[in-house]
Image 1 (cartoon, rainbow, N blue to C red):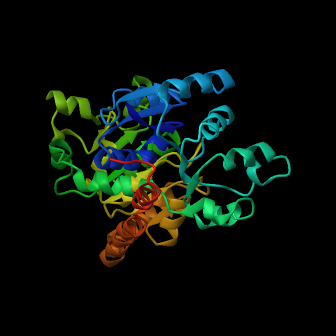
Image 2: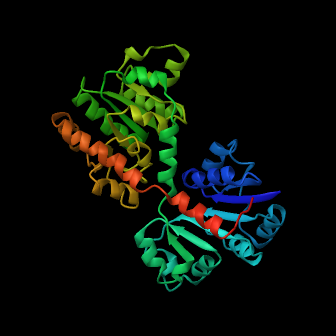
Image 3: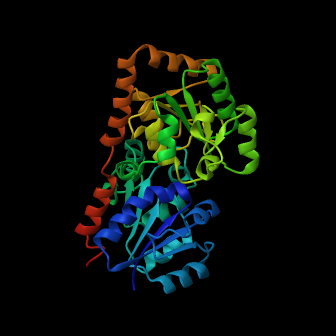
Length: 370
C-alpha cells in the first residue's frame, strides 16, 4: 500500500494535524494513513479513530527501531506535527529520500536550536524537506539558521480544525434545554483552582446566570470535589439516563468526554481552564463561536491567547473579583458584549488557511499523486 505517516506527540498535536490528515484522505484516497503517538493520552483517546487506517505508539527512538519501522511502513510521505524531533527516525527518513514535512511548528529564542550547543538540533532541522511554521517570530528565528526557501509561514492548522468542528456541529438537545432563556457560563477543561474561582463568582452573582463545567479530568474523585463546591448540581450522565431533569439545578457538570468543543456555542461567555496551573487549554474552540473568552494568568506561551487579548476578544483574570467585574461590564453594556463576540469570531476566521497552504505545497511538489 501507498502510505502517509503522520506523527503527533499527544492529543493536542493530533488535533493540529487532523485537518491535514482529513484533506489528504479526501484528495488522495489511494493512500492509507498511519498515525503514531508518543503520549498515552493521545493514543488512548484516538486509538479507534476511523479517519486513519492504523493508529500506533511510535517505538522508542533508536537506530534499529527507526530502521525496522521505516522498512515495514515504507511511507510515501511523513508529516511530524509541531515539535517532535527524534534523531534516528528523522535521519533514517532523510537517508531514504522520503519527503518529510513539519507542520504547525513553533520556535522560541531560548530553545536549543539557537544556542551554541544546538548543533544536533540544527542538524535535525536539515532533515526536513520543508517546515510550515506558525508565527512571524518563528520565521525570524529560523531565518538565522536555515535558508528561507526551506520554511513557510503558514499559520496554525488548529484554526482550520475549530472552524470545521463549529460548522459541522450538531445540536445537543439536553444542553439546549439547560441553557434555554438563560445566560450561561461554560467553563472548559477546568482544574481545582479554576473551580474555586467559579464557585465564588457563581455564589456572588447567584441568579444572574447558569453554569456548565466540563472539567479536564472527569474521574470520580474530581467530579465529587466539584459537587461539593456546588451542592445539588446536575451531572450530564444523570440527564442522559433520565434520573434528573434540567430544571433541577443551575449548575451542570459534563462528566464525560467528547462534548466540549460542541457545547461552547450555547455559552454567553466562556471560561478556559489551566491558566492557574500548568498552562492554558484550548481557547480557539470557544472563540470560533463568537464568545468572549476568560482565563487565568499563565497564558504567555500561547500565541492564540495573546492574539485574542490583543483583539479585544479575551481577558486574563487574577481572581474572582476581577472575573465578576468583567461579567458586570458585559451585562451593563450589550454593545460592548457584542463587539467582544465579533472580535472573537473574527480573530479565528482571519487566521484560517494553514491547511490549504500545506496541501498546495504537497500538490505542487507532487509529493502525493492520484
